[in-house]
Length: 328
Image (cartoon, rainbow, N blue to C red; front, side, top):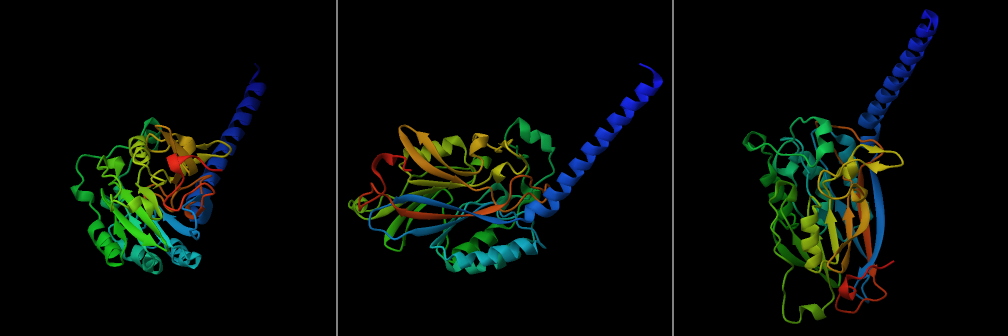
């Protein structure tokens, strides 16, 4: 190859490298400045209520990761009350900063007049730490052994939730009547921190199953062991967050990671979890925020989820479809 041809190839390679760098820079700016603030509402309809019940609207919030100064997120959250949900389910990771409790509670104040339940995530307990982003490709993120210096004011947040009447489902179960249906809840502490302890659904009275009811299971991180326990325990619906929908996705492909052992194609959306012959609706929210140390989303817009539950064509008056059969 003569010198002129070599120079031509080097010029072409240089232009390609500059083009790739420019595209990467543009994607970084878009993801960190624009897309992470493009909050949206995903709506789903599930025919799983007992016969004769009116539709029930559940607002599923996840992974808010609030920090001071996030005024766009705060304003958007306050507007969600206009959806008139019957129930709010908060699946954790509300905080990302020690000074975030007040802006979080101010943002959620209109919704805290609505009945609600909640479970914590790891970033409710502890502030995030800087990690090599490529480490997420090797498996779920690991937590350092010393948490004490990173503890967040989660007790203050939980106390405020409880004062508003929201039910703490941290390794607990409880029933709540909404409309004319009894909702039986079970929840676990964060499986990502291996704090989960499944306690089953409320037993109720000997005639509890004859009344209109629905069993809802709630967790922050949708690890398979927890989903299996919920399904084996006869859950009718499972709600979780944690995955951020992958947070940085490939257009046309989807999530590269779920940050747990959930298959990446389930990292966002409504699917069905199958275990021991049962098939249960599983809603995994992509969440509304990011770690404050990785403030970017790409091909994965932040979301809240509005689930409208309607009566099942095959339901009986006492409960959801027998055997957890898939509908639709």
